[in-house]
Image 1 (cartoon, rainbow, N blue to C red):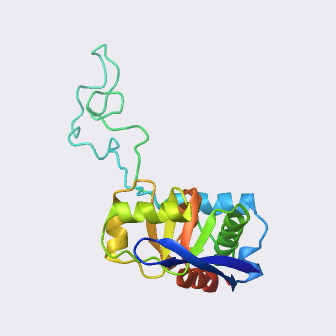
Image 2 (image 1 turned 180 degrees about the vertical axis):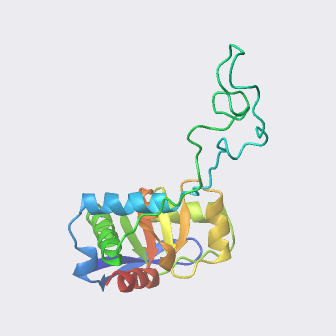
Length: 210
């Protein structure tokens, strides 16, 4: 199959011409597998969880080594430690412990989900390919004008070698993110209304998913 590539001329970002490039049907013409994409996205988000929460149980709470009062003949309930969970200042009954939330996802499943996502982006006209994306200065206004010229909104910019100017220009736009081609992930692709990718980055993604 073929994808249309827009050619940007000069710093103004005016679209001078376009061309078609051949891409693999196995990557950009796959059916959308919602269940697979959901499983991979959930696993990706779970792996990003820190999982460092920790509470003190009755054995972790400081003090409580001595029995507060004798067992019998006081008319009180039996108590063995002042750090019991039912006491103020005591430990937590089911104390949270650090844990790893990571879920195993096979490489074949991950690549299948990525192929499904990029194929759906192409079918829904949310994937825009440009020959290159170069900013002469780190100016947000220049980037906004370029995006308006390409008619893309809230994009994920996937670049083969993002420059400091591009990163700084996009930093002030909360709805725009810049990713290096090899760092793109399913959550980033789905979180934006459109994807703007350079032709070299397109080849990198195609190679990764082939």
